[in-house]
Length: 293
Image 1 (tube, rainbow, N blue to C red):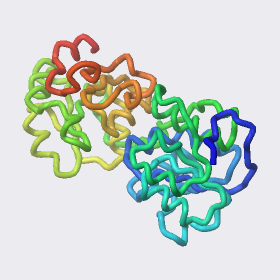
Image 2 (image 1 turned 180 degrees about the vertical axis):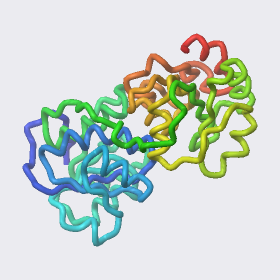
Image 3 (image 1 turned 30 degrees about the horizontal axis):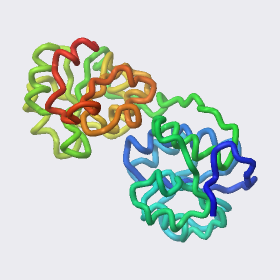
């Protein structure tokens, strides 16, 4: 079984495609352009966690489904954009004859490669959004990066936060978070334009920053706040990637993750990073952030 390289002569013309990318928020956002590009070639259903189904339906324009055995069956092909044992196993139990995924050397959980029969080699020096498009090209060579309108995902409210500098102090992993005391000092220097966004179980820590708190939001309301902002500042987290996708100016704070691969797509130059040095969020200075504003 040899790797399928993007642009190879192999292509299977099928009508029904199962996309697997269950989570997380930023990763779903990064997968959407590749799925949008594939829409012209396949009727697509996307297995994804329930919290992201509205995003998939509204922005990607495909049918989101729960990853249950009943829903997974009946597709001609499956493409696993996640590259985990769980996701590739779901592709295998779908019963699809052709199962595409990243080749073994490009995935963290190597046994995931056991469940795909069309491993795809990609250029790992590119951004993950382009990784996903390279994988999609194994199914439809010649795909180009589409323009995707994320603005439709933004809710009608909350209103009244236009032009604010939004701070995103939290991330899915603690090592990707800039210290709260640094955000507190940044908020002081930004003054009344600073607005702190927070999620479930984060309000108390957000209040410690000392700036105005945004109201509690769902994902679509969060999109409205981010769309209306003048600048969004935060670490490698889903809301930062959503802001970039909404074409809001962002400043990404990157320590342990590589902004060349995982940075805000289209705005990598706006990152303040220590990935190439200490890889520590502690070493990101306020002055370097202020120079980007």
